[in-house]
Image (cartoon, rainbow, N blue to C red; front, side, top):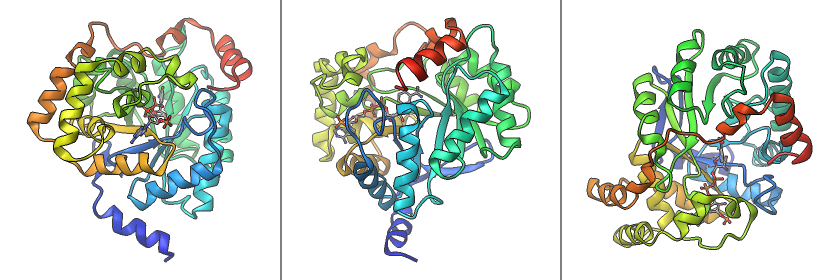
Length: 344
Ligand SMILES: NC(=O)c1ccc[n+]([C@@H]2O[C@H](COP(=O)([O-])OP(=O)(O)OC[C@H]3O[C@@H](n4cnc5c(N)ncnc54)[C@H](OP(=O)(O)O)[C@@H]3O)[C@@H](O)[C@H]2O)c1
């Protein structure tokens, strides 16, 4: 066993694992690393050196869950993830989540998309999610059947959805007859608590785990205040969380109490809510904070303080992230995301 692998084994013993599926079909680390930052066009430079640093640190700390998508940098994120894991000789240890874009509505489209992911990653992904709700008039049931077919064709082992609200998720779980929907990956953080009202109680009843994207509001919950890249500039949640004195002060009080950073507290709050955060990491320090969050158990009184300071972000409306895509026909989405923007 290499030195690197023995390090992984030691740290796995301390970082808690969590179960996906009603009968614990798959065990993953309680926190994951998001790979949109690697290759995503809105985030700025990120090459193989950074990917190796981030993934190496994650594996050392027992974080084995990595999140990517065909659309991130038009495949560049998947490619970097595969290359870095190969370089670290750890391709087999990772649990890889990727996503087929929500404009894919045919079997041919699904098959080609995941075959592309397999080629770029250098192995098949463990879980494939449908990235956003299908465009009208295509139904949730139709895409769930296509996800199930991916498992039957050996292109992935497990399936899930992303950005599905309560109604979509209920329909998806009802339609999934042959393979379970393991996760719904949604925008969830102290600065965006909309999923708590209808989606999370339903997901708990259905046995579907919530994976939280944007867990740090693009860095605002880690203390970043400047919209210094396009991802932050375009995100109203970053802009409001960075200026929210009440929430920032609550984070500061609890960070001082535990002697950790704000990022650790914001991620530990999500873990206390039984979500699995996928945090965008570009440096070793980001990964170390993620690992710390997975081992820190917030006291109930800390959770209550944070709940109170962020209560305005429960909002009134239903979960609606990326829902505007429902009104855009698949060819137009494909043209915009793949050709015009060359990924996001
Ligand atoms: N399913 C979906 O529709 C969807 C949508 C968006 C994202 N995602 C997934 O979710 C992942 C994360 O969400 P996100 O991209 O919105 O970002 P995020 O995790 O909320 O924020 C990530 C940024 O926060 C900063 N950061 C991270 N850890 C830090 C720490 N310990 N201390 C200080 N700063 C820290 C870094 O900024 P710097 O790099 O500038 O230092 C990092 O790029 C993505 O990578 C992607 O995999 C999924």
